[in-house]
Image (cartoon, rainbow over the protein chains, first blue to last red):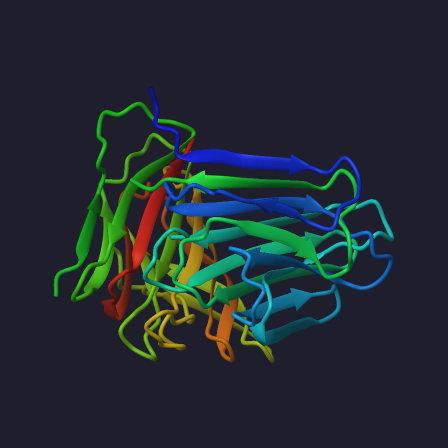
Amino acid sequence: MATQTYVPISSQTLGSAAASVTFSSIPSTYTDLVLVISGRSTATAGNNNSQLILNGDNGSNYSMTRLTGDGTSPASDRVSNGFYAGWAFIENNTNSNFTPIIYHIQNYANTTTYKTVIGRGAGASNFISAAVSMWRSTAAINSIYVGNTGGNFVAGSTFTIYGIKAA
Amino acid sequence: MSPILGIYASQGKLLGSYESIATINIGTGGSSGASFTSIPQGYKHLQVRFIGKIGSATGAPSIYFNGVSSGTSYSWHEIRGDGSSVAAYSSTSAPYLSDTVSPSTVYNNSNFTAGIIDILDYSNTNKNKTLRQLVGVDNNGSGVIELFSGQYMSTSAITQLDLFNGYTWQQYTSIALYGIK
């Protein structure tokens, strides 16, 4: 029988609006994590940012570099000594679109290096974004909090975390 | 220093829909390159997932296929953001795919570049081969994020994939090759 390499660890679908979802007790037996989000913010204006807080660390231990396009102009921005990772844009609630976001965390369980999160988000109405962020911790990742700067996620938003096991 | 070879480690194994083919983990002392050879042809697509660092502040990780690292068989485009500005680069008739994102641009013992490389239809002998990459590194005040696309102007099936940088891949670098059915 083929070895399972790309395995769903946990999935959450919001039955009602919620500020966040958290994946806890993430096993350390995989090589990489992939977080797949199909979400929309309840905010009614602006480009909201998705937020990842790792292992409950709410300190200024994150930093990010981002590349975006809004259909008119490309842009790049940065946050140093920030309070979360991730930073891909997420749609606001002025339309019915859900933003697909995929984050990758390679070697998430190693205890030697800082953790790098890389991902992309694409809002059908007004933007595309790619971002890389660093969590300045050598701890293995065992929990991921997913929030957004615009407030809550709408009902129907889905969040799934996968584990990938290298040979 | 000899490159480390990633050999198909499970010959004869039943192929799944997303399967690990081989992984190269760089140990103490580093390695000048990373090579996946004898890539099985039973998948539809390939994906490389890496997190790595090179031993130079100016080196650029590069990719070539089937041992072809000279001549004019490649072309590529990229767009990159450095936290304040956006730039685009390209090259035609190139000897290999040269990614200008350097894991060591922000050289630090704890910061590693992450990347995902997709190669669709790698075994098709009727098409030139294309590659796309999402790659980036952040160092709390510097860093880059990049989207990259490349072409290998050959209809040959890909049986070998090399990642090199002209310097050395540093310890704790990990490069994994997956097959997608």
